[in-house]
Image (cartoon, rainbow, N blue to C red; front, top):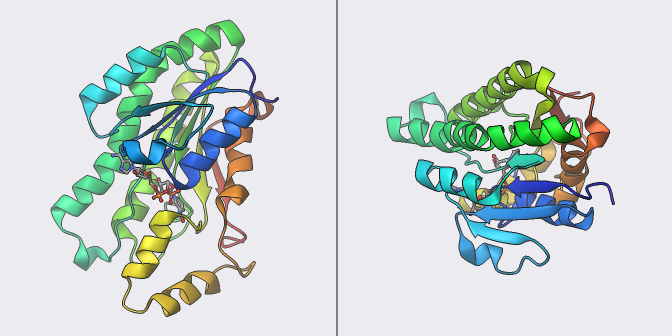
Length: 245
Ligand code: NAD
């Protein structure tokens, strides 16, 4: 058990990477508070505490941080993909992408940080993990303007938090997955003009010839939340199947 005596909060834990991460942390002995905007998606989760949380609601963010108490780890996983070039973006799409992908992450981390500083003072370390993407400041992708810009901001936010609190035992890293086969990816493929071709195109940009599964991503999540990564902070950790080789 690599995460015994640790308490973690995970956002967007109803499906995809967040769900698989919450279950993996549970399996390693952590107390996990799995949250999502969609309570129905949380229903099947066993062995974890669940709570409905819309991370874009400041009052809900303050309330959950107060309710769960000091955390050893926070995985800010919630995010949305806006599909389109600069010419396709409406102001409200841009604002929503930044609100969910960046501002909500800042608020929840700000609300949880005092408790995490207390934990780190006692145990020596606490870990914040922010969901970014390979589509960010790391690499540009077609039709990902708002998404890439917001995920680049996640990396900047991550490095700033890491710099400010490194001496107090807080580590903060960003996770940058490649294309992962999750319900929202399936939705994006299904919504395209030619779904068969869209799936082929996603796979064609993968040097390893396949999409990631959540099981390819979760080991990095567990590592970055655990004490095994105690000398790692401020990093944008790529798990992309070699796309950025
Ligand atoms: P997903 O997109 O399939 O599921 C997202 C989950 O977030 C859902 O359970 C949904 O209910 C929840 N959610 C949506 N709005 C929310 C809100 N306001 N508050 C709380 N929860 C909310 O899952 P995924 O594809 O694993 O994506 C999770 C994260 O990983 C996102 O930040 C995404 O940008 C990032 N990511 C995904 C991929 C990929 O290819 N799937 C690649 C890189 C990064």
